[in-house]
Length: 118
Image 1 (cartoon, one colour):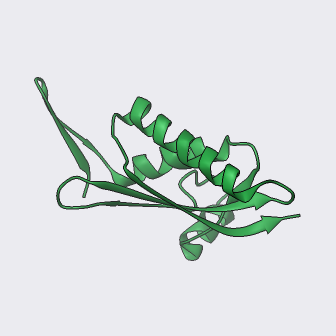
Image 2: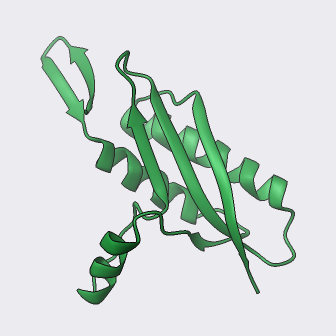
């Protein structure tokens, strides 16, 4: 179910995949992040086999009935970094980029640290 906006020119619908891709690209730019963990392993493996990138990897987006957007990020951090500070930087970056780029406020960004890369 896409997030919709009513404007004077009509209705704009932003799909969950667009939000996930934007959030994934914003998260991967943060220092201390080694990568995103796969949540949909079959889909992610197929994209790897075909040589395509999946910038929405490790991001799950749910849009509730009242247009509340919930974002879950599954991350892998680098060894030796402060995990809490890294997660906070990722949360702030994703929140900022979604507000500036897509125009949505995301009050609920959950971050799950799935691993540490040595």
